[in-house]
Length: 217
Ligand SMILES: [Zn+2]
Image (cartoon, rainbow, N blue to C red):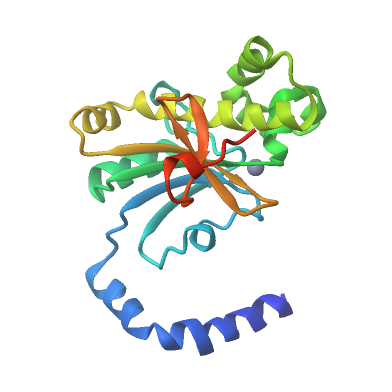
């Protein structure tokens, strides 16, 4: 708690003091975020830090495993409400689902028996129960970290499919008014990889030309 309080003081004396105008403007005009950012609760993933986004720029939804339950699953976890609010009301132009490496939720999705004693976690992660089967079918030859990283990627792609199950999302995607991206944040290197539907791979973002972009493995 003391650490948090010291942090609040530091924020007010530094960042806030230098950006007072921005906060006053945001308070007056309301938010107009460009991006809906769906990511994991993991404390090592800090959306505004890794994208250098200012307050007011990211509308963030966080949950264990960056899961988007499909439209027919109702208001599960409040995710559908946040998506509807961001897309229909705030009219964001971009939706990002951002998974990350070394994700505990992915380990639990791959090995559900490990979280048998956590009924809420088990029920929530069952929303991504397609992932282990996909991994078995497509990445049966991988093991260890490579298999886990493949699962992180597949889990992101499953959530992009779920996003499309919302009629208001599909309509905007088809009309070119909304862009959808699947990302993976690699904690150990700080890199972000973006799903490229043409190559079917996750390619490094912010790395100059296409040829210089490395592939997440
Ligand atoms: Zn995670």
